[in-house]
Length: 282
Image: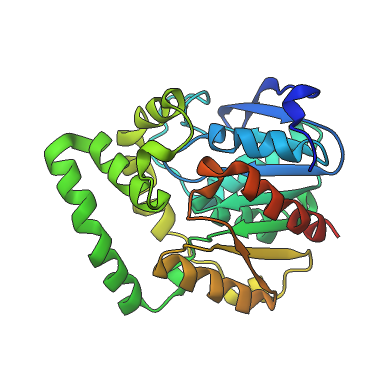
């Protein structure tokens, strides 16, 4: 196994102004370039341990998306879209000299990575999409049924404890058996909980459910795109991963653990992700 890069390759912090936003980013390691895009309600800290493992083979770029943690909300900015987020990612790659890169996204981060592939192909050598949130491409009745099962849990938590409790309920459900407390460390969990109101106001549901990629455009993608599902994926995420893999005519790769496994078992996740990134890089 490759030794953790933190022993020889500490993260280098940086900031860049793109598209009217200031983005915090970190770079680790050397080699083929990889950009990692985080999902909703987290920040790039969710990938810290995985990025350290991968940095033995890749130059890994992680960043806090606009409005998240160390990337402040732009003045007057009150909503976002997958397209805006993909434009940010493209501008970040260009500004830091890391284009083209293999792009990894998980959860709602897959929508941004996919849009980057579709609209900024010159920035991308390949992509790995883990647990893709392409819910708008699934049968509406199925999606409504799945949300009807999960929403009451989140709504009850918000009613009793506000957005922070709703945040914990949602990510605890996605974490699997260990719940929210199993994710990384207390410091990062507390940082993510400060994003609770922002998460519900900016990304649920308008950004995630407002994005519907064109299946024909997906089928016409030229760069290698790999799709990963969690071994313990919940039904709606499994259905989304299967749909996207079918459109791309690519294999569906199983990753260890639940939806947020990179926060819980990063060594195993990095071991599974490393060869997939190499295949996506061509």
